[in-house]
Image (cartoon, one colour):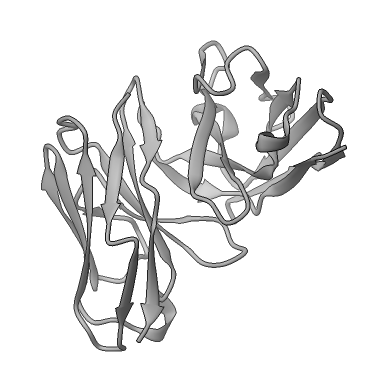
Amino acid sequence: EVQLLESGGGLVQPGGSLRLSCASSGFDFSNFGMSWVRQAPGKGLEWLSGITGSGTVTYYADSVKGRFRISRDNSKNTLYLQVNSLRTDDSAVYYCAKRLNGDHDVFDIWGQGTLVSVSS
Amino acid sequence: DIQMTQSPSTLSASVGDRVSITCRASQSISSWLAWYQQKPGKAPKLLIYKASSLQSGVPSRFSGSGSGTEFTLTISSLQPDDFATYYCQHYNSDSRTFGQGTKLEIK
């Protein structure tokens, strides 16, 4: 079964950092681009960052550029998101998502999400 | 940045109804549009990609149409399991933008 499982969320103070992880199984992880998408409570979906299968190309939404860093370890079938300088408006459920195929960021598999709460 | 606007924001309908949700792009996006369904507390589920291609395993009552700036998701006969929030998403090499969502409610 194709599966993604996020972890690493939690309660953090403004200005703090977290490292989110997304463990994959059931597919050839290194062959697929991956992304992170978040959803603030009661709000819509916001794409944050993506990375190619090899990990050589990364790209970010303007809202998180310079604060968040995406990476992957293909030997561990795991995707990461380092989130720094957290603000209260970064509070959200963070999802990892797998590209359907090819070079386009349409997502056929999603994790269950990990909740990040930023509060003093 | 390309903006995606969905309408309506909320839609009330009954089981068996045919319903349509519209997604408009602020500029032409060819057919680079996907539709997702999301239920409370769950991750989004891909329904349609490239405007009209049905994702594997998705019931055929779901269909997508459109190109350029105007797109439609149609559910031909609503089933109880279809009451959820639906999002469109534009995707290309430079942009990945979701619409604000349409909540489909039971009338």
